[in-house]
Length: 71
Image (cartoon, rainbow, N blue to C red; front, side):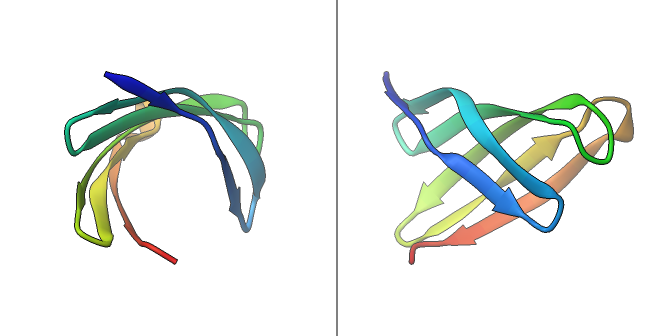
């Protein structure tokens, strides 16, 4: 597989992507955030054309869907 780097910018701040991996059409990465509390988010998503769909896992808070569209 290959690797990737990048950053996340949102309403609660920004974070650098770590452990970015590419396997076929699947991406996985982690984000270390500090707001609203320190935690590591674990993310996995599938790319389909210009769209990205997946899940972010936020420790004891569970998992949430993530989506994206190529800019």
